[in-house]
Length: 362
Image (cartoon, rainbow, N blue to C red; front, side):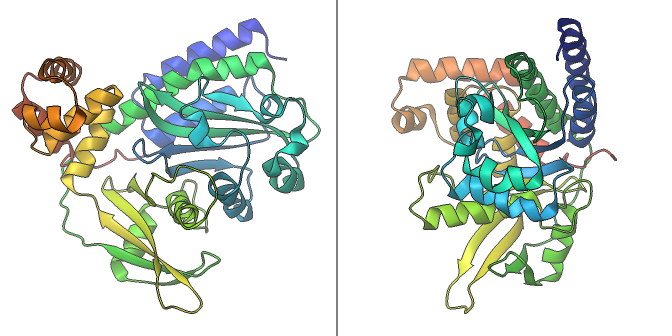
């Protein structure tokens, strides 16, 4: 059972960790190591996410078989169930458990019945790692099927840690803009069969694929590709879900570059194949992502993105249907948070970030 003293100690240690300047992988690894000192956890999955699309990007996985990945992804994107990550990203609380969501009737969850039980997992605690209106990652913790359910005190502890973990992931994103890199490589193409096996790829596709592999190394495709394909399947289905999100996501490579991952069907192929395009991100796409790391509100983010697209004040007023005074107030708030004093500096600051994109060695 989680004691008050151990909870306070764990919270203090992990909060400090989140402000220690670690890169994303090191932060997640150390946070899980310390969390496990106070919470019995059989296995876990801790992924970063693209705040704009809520797709998983890089994942850290422990004691979850590779063959379970497509099952969890299908459940997340294609099946009705409780505690979906996209739901937690906007829910009143970012943390929930299967036990609490089903009111103790875990078997009502298809994820529990069809995936967790065969794997020997019991209760599951999930969290959307969010702060300031942006979601920077997702976490899933599993208990042994014979173990205790996660308690309200354990949920409260994780909920208290969520904004700090989000801040740590956000800071890692900014801190990792440390060195210039040339963006001379072109898009890569992967061809996937229905079972997501790799049918073929271009040389650049093979290179980008190696650079976005999950940690530690796994033989399966990276999580961002699984998620993009599942989002594509959702768009093609009648299953309720976040249909306004495109089957694409932005992901940082091991060398610090940014890629946009697109999923699309190849028409006329029998059997059906899926094309995955791995394309170096355009400066605007990186600038918009990095601006979210400054903690802008949703409306401030919309105003900032329109500024980056060259819209005038009148253009922003027309697009967002707000007053000129409101636009100016939002701009003042943006300038304060980013630490600049004009639109020109905002554009220069945002676009300069995309040149400083080599990750520190981990």
